[in-house]
Image 1 (cartoon, helix red, strand yellow):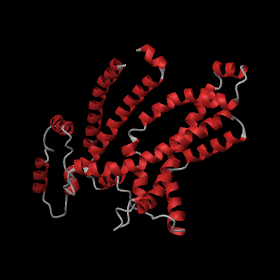
Image 2 (cartoon, rainbow, N blue to C red; image 1 turned 120 degrees about the vertical axis):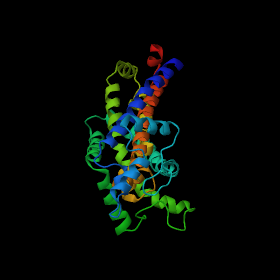
Image 3 (tube, one colour; image 1 turned 90 degrees about the vertical axis):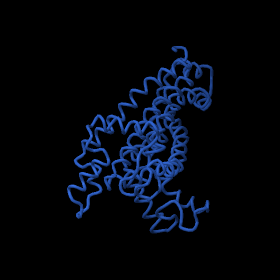
Image 4 (cartoon, rainbow, N blue to C red; image 1 turned 45 degrees about the horizontal axis):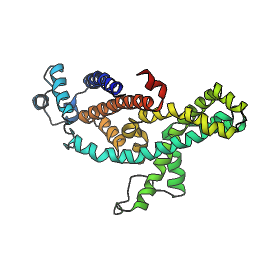
Amino acid sequence: MLKYIVKRILQAVPLLILVTMICFTLINLAPYDAVDALRTDSMTEEELEAKREEYGLNDPIPVQYVKWLGKIVQGEFGNSLLSHTSIKYDLKIRIPGTIKLVLPSYLTAYFLAIVLGLIAGSNKGRWPDKIIDGFCSIGIATPTFWIAMIMMYFLGYKFKIFPLMGMHTIGLENSMIDYLQHFAMPYMVLTIGFLPDLTRYVRGSTISQLKEDYVIVQQSFGAKKSEILFKHVSKNVLIPLITKLGMALPMLVTGAVITETIFSWPGIGSYFVKAISAMDYPIIMAVLVLSGTLVILGNLLSDVLYCITDPRIKSMQ
C-alpha cells in the first residue's frame, strides 16, 4: 500500500510541473501583459517600459518561468497588480468562504444521490426510475446560473424569503441566523447542480451490479429485494463512488465560480472573475495553478481511496 502511494506521488510531480508550464504559457500567449492592466492615458511609453523592467517582463520567457516557479514553490504568489495586496493573504481569506459553501452542498448532493440512485437503479423502467431520471436529465441540461437567477427572483426579490447577495448583513457578521439566510440560496443552487450527475452515476452502477451473479444467488436463497439492495448491492456501488470524493477536491476551491459571482459570495470564484475582468495576471495565474494542482491531488486521492476500499486492488499491489 505504502509503495503504491509513494509511486503515485512521484508520478504526480512531473504533472504538477507540466501544469505550471501550461498556465504560465497560456498567460504569456495573451494579447496583453501585466503592465497593460496598469496603463493609464497619462502614462508614457518610457514609464510603461520601466514598469515592464520592474516586473521582469523584459527577461527571456524561460527566465521568467523559473523565477515565477521558485516563488510558487515557496508559497509566494506575489501581489495583485491593482490592489497591491498579497495574493497569498487574499487566498487565505477567500478559500474558507468557498469551502463553507461548496463542501456542505456537495456532501448533501452526494448522500441524496446514493438514495435516489439506488431507488432508480433497482426500479429500472418503472415510474420511480422515470421520475428520478427525468429530474437528472433536466438538471444536467439546465445551466447553474439560470437556476440561480430563478431562485433570486422568486425567493429573494418577489417573496423576500432570503437575502439576495453576500455572506452577511453589515453589522450582523456574528449572527449565525443571518449567515444561514444568506447561505441558503447558493447552497440550494449548488446542491441541485451537483445532484443529477452523481445520481446518474449511482443509478448506472446499481443497474450494472443487479446483473451480477451474487444477486442471482441471493435471490435463489429467498433474500428480500430491499436486503439485496442495501446489504449487498449498495456496498459494491459505493466502492467506485467513494473515489468521487477525491475527484471533488478541486471543487472545494473552484467549484462555485458562477454561483459565487451571481450571489456576490466572498470566495475564490468571485475573486477569480474580478481578476479576469481587470486583467490582474498574478491572481489569474495563482488560481489556475491552484486549481490544476488540486485536480492532480484529487486524482491521487481517488486512486488511494480506491486502493483502500477495493480488496482486489490491494491484492494487485
